[in-house]
Length: 91
Image 1: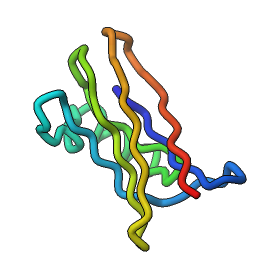
Image 2: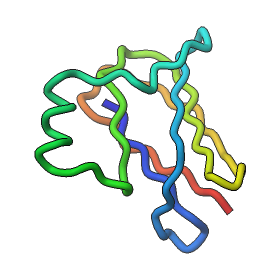
Image 3: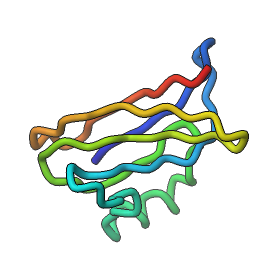
Image 4: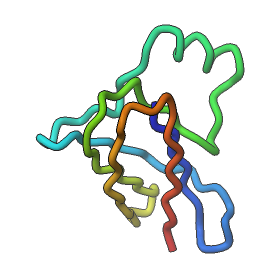
């Protein structure tokens, strides 16, 4: 799973739309197992981190966009680890 957090320049959490694309440009943002869905409902959805996955090993582009249109992106490589945390900063 990819755990994505979006922050401002002070490190405060921001609510953002997160999109993850694989190497071919396919959107894999909605990839979740039923276990993940049930866990999120049990714990309550967090605005601090968004969980995407499970994802296969490979290279991905993670993009975060705020309501006002500001955005940022980052390239991420997954090598088979269970979870990978990524923080994106938007100024």
